[in-house]
Amino acid sequence: MEYILDGATLPAAGTYKIGADALYGDEAKRVLAVRIGGETLPLTDTPRTGETAESITYESEEGRRIYERSVRFVFLLAARRLFPGKRVRLEHSMGHGVYATIDAGHPLTAGKVAALEKEMRKIVEDDLPFDLRFLSRDDAIAYFQADGQTDKVELLKCRPYEHFQLYECGGMYEYFYGVMVPSTGYLPQFKLQFYLPGLVILLPRPDGQMPPFQDMPKLAATFAKTARWNRILRCANVADLNRMTRERTLRELIRVSEALHEKSVSAIADQFVDSGARVILIAGPSSSGKTTFAHRLSIALRVNGLEPVKLSLDDYYLNRDQIPRDENGEVDLERLDTLDVPLFNEHLVELLQGAEVETPTFDFKTGRRAEETHKMKIRPDQPILIEGIHGLNDSLTSEVARRMKFKIYISALTALNLDDHNRIRTTDARLLRRLVRDHLFRGTPPEETLAMWGSVRRGEEAYIFPYQEEADVMFNSSLVYELCILKKYIYPMLSAMKPEHPQYTLAKRLVKFLNYIQTSDVEDEIPPNSILREFIGGCCFYKNLD
Image 1: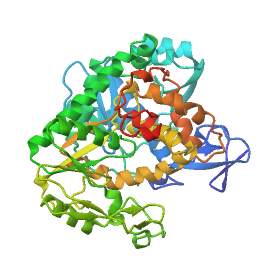
Image 2: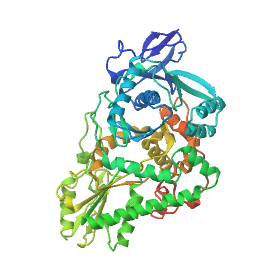
Image 3: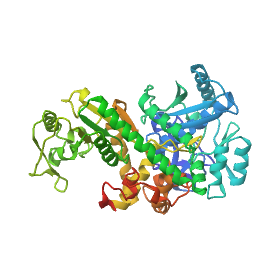
Image 4: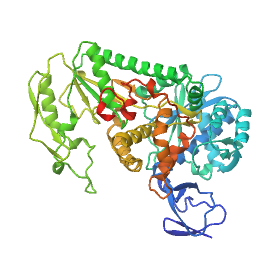
């Protein structure tokens, strides 16, 4: 038998290990898995004669997920050895890492975290294999029931298939929705950071190098607040959400979730009034619900006796032929220098001083500034609201003093897990929102949205995430119930995507976790000003979307 990887013919007999350091010394380029016909397969799979495969390395999003998944297994195995029988929960992203908590029966300390990392290093040095096991659903449920993992038991009861795959390593069985590296020896790069009351599992950057720990207290506090409310609502895992769907109690969850959003928006409006600032800057990644949030905040400000006015960044784009191109000759419209920043600052400063300005109008059809302008003037008591990707970057508003600016970071920070050990990434939740909106209101098929997502994510990493801790407040636009609403719109189309399609791997990844979520037909309970209405329609702020 022979196997063709990236154009090179390699011998193969049963199992193989093509990611050895002898072939790939650079950790970022080390082969972690392969892709054949759109399917991601472990390196321990048996290839078919002459089959052509694409290597998956840490440089790709898929490779980084495989690496993280495998490190999580090692972490769970080490925790089991040091804290047997204790509950471990992997919660959310934090920079280039994952935040986790351990109910060890007594407080976690830096010393205990150091001991955990030492145990993980030993497991890596032992180079234990990740063995794939095929079990019936009943046998898997029996195993996890005996092991005390009731969260997994409830989740697997929702699984639509009778058989599935578990991985075994070091005597521990775990279920992750995706493939693993061949063995623990593939995982030399990681670090644990004690972060009261839990810890962060730090992972390499896309280039394979370990970054220093970066504290993100505002982001961590926002996640913690959401997780606390999820526990209060008794909806921390997907199994809880499915139970509410079955028991017909989802309507109450929707009402409370929406009331929490309303309370948060009102509180942010009050904070702005107390701050004495004049300019409100709103920024966040794609599909966070920025536009709906801005409308709701405007209403909350009017309740406080203010009349905010919006200054659109879109009108300050440079003409397309004036925009700098990158090394490949392409235009990146998300860069700050695609905007006429000097003119924007000039107008902003003049408005704050009571002058009348003529703001430009950008014609997106021609890619040029139109001759038409708009006169604009504000009163001293009117705040200026600016929504845009660069809102948290002081370079956008460099001529306005910091005390006059009130910065808001908004994102869908999903705190709902599949189970204690399988989190739902905020990135995936936002992508689902965008897939639904693009399909329903922009006529964009899922394949095109998926194809653009990589570029969108790179823009977020470069222009949004580095500034998120600069915000005065953070607003979590995630709604704990939204996945059971979004699923019915996009699941059939994602499931129908063929393996030969370039975006099949990404589509299948979304389908895998959506398989566990039950849809619910309770949309009439969702209020017209809900963030979710921006994506499914029926929003009172822009009826033209219907």
